[in-house]
Length: 426
Picture (cartoon, rainbow, N blue to C red):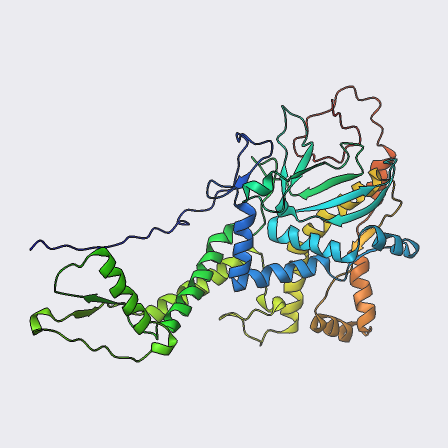
């Protein structure tokens, strides 16, 4: 009798380093952006956030620090107007999108005469796709769709012009970082940890499966009385799965009835030595790489305890870590958002300046600084906020010299995304 063996090979689809590509040769009017040769960029980032505990903690923590206690202005008489134009909850969502996706967007509402901005609402940036440009022109607008994976819903997409490029009452102010060799979208700062986020997620799946299988070793069950038909094999496999998998079936034993000893089934255990050490190494390494990608100096700032950093850290170390974190990670995000809002206000006829985010400082740092300086915690917080306010002198100087009447030809600025009032739509 001819011996037959049946094996299935499963290939993992994320074995390569993720390369984000903008598909400018697409037949669509918009530009898809993807990693696995699909329009899946935003979807994969969302999945990495939803399935990796360390990645989610870092994104939530940094987003909270970016928003801090909200956006404020030196002119107290303008604060109420600022909160009315940009609702705090919308700004919080914008800060979160900027950290998670590396892109964020405002939906700018103009008055009917298109002379003044009335509102700036958050727009889910994952629902936007940039319109393809012609030649060296700027991006004229963005298509909005609630689900870009559904072709039927793509038919209901809505085109919204870029801020400063039209006289429409609604425009999109798209905020992004400069990216070399990338025009339409930017990448999140943690993109290099995308695979490690998926690795951490797969480890959680592995442990869950181990629990459901009662921590039974990997085994191969051989039936030595011939190869049954495909339908019969499926029935046998289903019976084995129902009887010997799941937490409720842990510790059960198998009873086999055979005509003789020659035809009895054999169960071969596949040895896998030191699995716990390998799992622990992968888990710690993935967590470390995720923290590095997010530029987290001290995980304790976000309530993350690692093997090399317990709760015995001194307050001076925490202050140093927080200072580095604010300077190298938080400020760039805040400045990008504030500069975008300042430019929007300038174009939109809003007389509000000296914007700054009030910082969210850990209480242990405030208490320690207060003891050293003899000030109250409130005074220390006020001093920190004053030192972090954006200086509007450069912005004012720019406005005073913002006279383009002598320029006969507009310079090529591929990274400029629509702050120019002299945008030529013809």
